[in-house]
Amino acid sequence: MKFSDVIGQNTTKLRLIKTVKENRVSHAQLFLGQEGCGKLALALAYTQFINCTKRNDNDSCGICPSCIKYNKLIHPDLHFIYPTSKTQQHDKPVSTDFVAKWRELIVENNGYISLADWYEKIGIEKKQAIINANDCNNIIKTLSYRSYEADYQVVIIWMVEKLFHAAAPKLLKILEEPPDKTLFLLISENQEQVIKTILSRTQIIKIPGIDDEELTARLVSEFPEPGPVNDAVKISNGNYLEAKQHLLKLEEGELNIQWFTKWMRLCFGNRVADTLDFVNEISKLGRDRQKSFLIYTLRLIRQSLFISTGNDGLVKLNKGESDFIIGKEGKRFYPFINLQNAGLISDEINNSIYHIERNGNASIIFLDISLKLGSLLRIK
Ligand SMILES: [Zn+2]
Figure 1: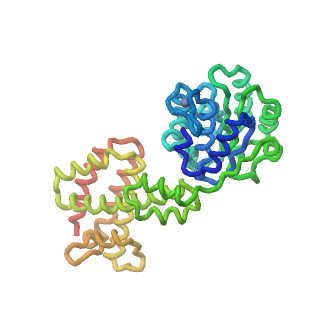
Figure 2: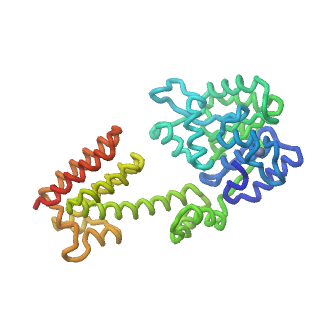
Figure 3: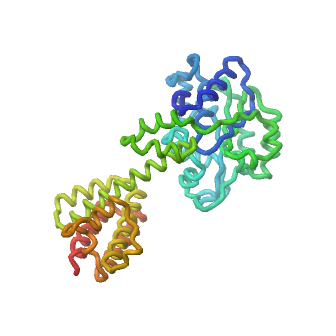
């Protein structure tokens, strides 16, 4: 990750670059800032810059052997500690157990991740994760081998507020007597929750939310429809992850109604060749996306039933949805859903969700339900 990949944060970038140029890189620093401000991205760009063998004035080169290993997060002198929790595979979890998933998540998202993203990645959504004492023991062991490639060994401790109290003395000891040429970058979103003695041993770098203009520029380059970007920036308070989430949801919502409209017409029309094309398109999506589309379909079936049965007060549809479901006389979708078929259709969709969740073959599942919907929609 280069500094140029980090969104905005120019003041902090300059400050960090200066510490390298003036040869006063402090051995323990705490990058403190709200979610989505880019603190992990900055830490990665900073350490890549420090260890780059061909760095220029303001950034790492991105192509030297050190940068290439940094880009993939596989540099042997780059270590990570992050919160973990028990999973089916790991009874006594430490960070290194999850390193493949960690690298994948960071690389995919250019260093912009939230705690929730991480929990989801390792499948512990509902549990509380911590950084435990074994993690600190491991890092002490690892660091006792001398650095063999880079100028600096680097330890990045992500979400240090999750450090388990019993693990604190071990980390403190190593922060007090660090091995030579070792850099600790601690990352946190909440200063109040960081153990005080740890705080007092680090130099704090406060990182603000991303500047609106810089955030807008990045989002416009990532989303095809620039219209909603301004709204997303306004509500996100400099949080790139939140702004992106907002835009993805909009995009997802629009696609959902487009797909639903197309799919229902194809099913009802018994247009087999076109249905196959549609099924192929949907099958290429990830399972989560297929599932969320089916859940969306369930919702619109229920909404249509509300209208058919005269429960208009329960109806909640946005403009695009209402154009298809209520639409104009003769082109309305809701009359196709009634008390006779709504339950049967919902059962079939739920059944498809069940099979998608269990890794069934998506093309077979979607083709099967399409054919069934074709007949169920004709029940009067
Ligand atoms: Zn380089």
